[in-house]
Length: 292
Image (cartoon, rainbow, N blue to C red; front, side, top):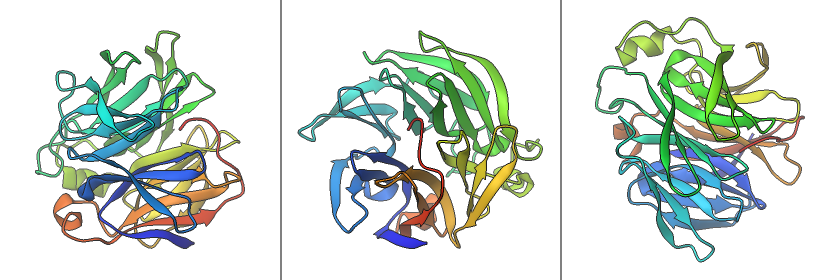
């Protein structure tokens, strides 16, 4: 395992795109891109705290602005403008996002004030169409986090506080149906206390990505590891990271480099004042596939 970047606050939502790894750094309010060989560029400054990243068919970039509940769009010049305002549709700060091949974005939110110690609440998933229209497409999700799209029409969502990956079929109009469990890691916690929930979870699925064999790599935010899972929940592989790992992405020239967003912990009050986050990388056998 190698260190690609260090000296950041809290890295999340990595995406491999056009030969570079794009990643959000929460508490410096930056999105950076690196070729993995030492060159790093700040590609966006997001005062509302960046999170999910995705790419439109025309090449523009969508970036989640967490705290003001907006999706921003970055054009080729680097300028940011508002793509959509989700304020009226969500109950918590925005989270991760996946953009499909038509440019529709599926966006999660916390659902409650995680960093402020509020009781755990389940929440919704929001779709943003290419014209900025906002619609709620699923509810009763236990902290929807990382997402992938398999086969062009199956959305898989990591529910961190439910300890599972949940799948939906994507209709032609972007609606979701046929909700089902793709992988369950133990029983979902039956408590509103976040601390108790964390103790009960066997896996805390955070960021995810998919490979060419249809398996999903899952950043297990609670156990300092990434796991490779197939549909049904069987764990095919496990890589320990030594630090907390909160997101992962396959990339590199051949798609076989697994990038890992690591930090000693996730609470904001611990991460914001220091620069201990690292982007790490490890080689795997099966290359990247699907979206993102």
